[in-house]
Length: 223
Image (tube, rainbow, N blue to C red; front, side):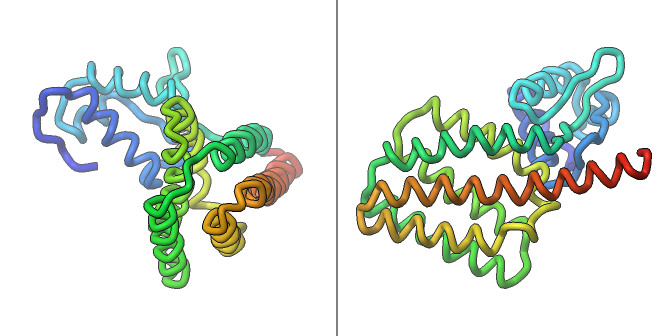
């Protein structure tokens, strides 16, 4: 993290800086976020840091434990199953209610093309960002501000572990995005909605299976 210039709203800038570090993977799951260390790194007092961490907790990115401090959240297999179960419902609804127009289709095509280029180049972070932008564009096309906010929080929580599970679904996800785009381009909303549910359910299955395997290995090792 870089030291911040003193701004008008220190809490907002502290929040944005810490949030970016979490989403970019600079600090991993279960990493402790101490107010003293963050205040020194960002060049501000602890008060806005404390307020920023509380805000991040409300978004599901940080866990604040009494008398222990703040930690980047860690997701179990059950957590991921719940998270992606919610995504299935939200994203299918988004596809069924969004407005299909030339601007949306052009934006979706840009994100697909960029994601494919980053995938071929092995640029994980950039690929994941384009993946998120694809889904974000669909949510925005609904015009439903509450839906957009909920989906933003859900997607951001997913970013915490997506970097470490990139290999499980990246290529398949890209192909599913192309199929969803094709259905929308043909104004076939029903097919697009079904494909979206299948897409999220497939990713959910791969992630949950991977995490369950890791949890079983830890149990066997007595960790």
